[in-house]
Length: 305
Image 1 (cartoon, rainbow, N blue to C red):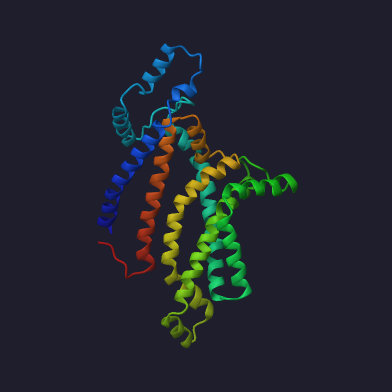
Image 2 (tube, rainbow, N blue to C red):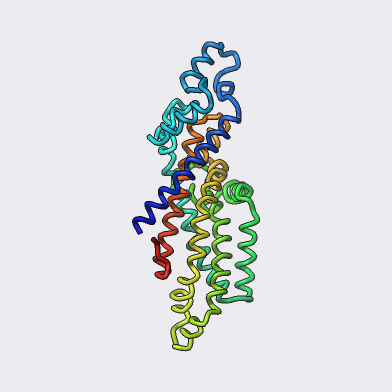
């Protein structure tokens, strides 16, 4: 197990390096941040001093080398807009993003998996049709549109919930629900598909012939054997969740890493954009490693060498 983890961590290094290269090139081909941050009437001497201070006067390959060396030390430089370390800005907003993302994922798992199991067990019934219709709608509606719609209904018309910001649990309901809807739909549809296949297996009929209760058969035997594909989907959806956080935090003015990323992109704040991209990449790689390790817990036949 330890050798497998070490091998996987080594294999992630080229992935992270590639992500660093892509984020570095995309941010630098978007234009010179000097023109955006400094006033148009700024003297040329001041512009040159600004470029020298942030290393923008160096060749691109030199900037990338210095960026990689500093990134390995956890140093992405100072924000061009806020004049604070980029890592500090990300860490300050990490708690808000973690709160939102974890709540959305928890809602998706608690609603999506039971909905998929019930839909599979009651196949071709009104319950199954309702679950399929709702999940189809959940996958079809864009998160930004759903967010605006929920603000209009629950914050403007009904005045039940705040339209944005962060503070109390009420501020979390709309953004977490908006972010979770697409995840609920995908998890429920995947669970239903896997459960339909497992419920037709011979060992399920054998368990029924032995007189085991339906609840134990469905939730104790069938779901466990159908859960590996569902777990894979949950792990992969972390990437989708990170992308959804950017949009959702912007719509609801949630002070998290996603909103910081949008602000940094508009301001061409290279250090912050690169720090956020690498932050999301590390989370995605780490979660998928944990998912791989959980396979052996769910299915003892799976081993790691």
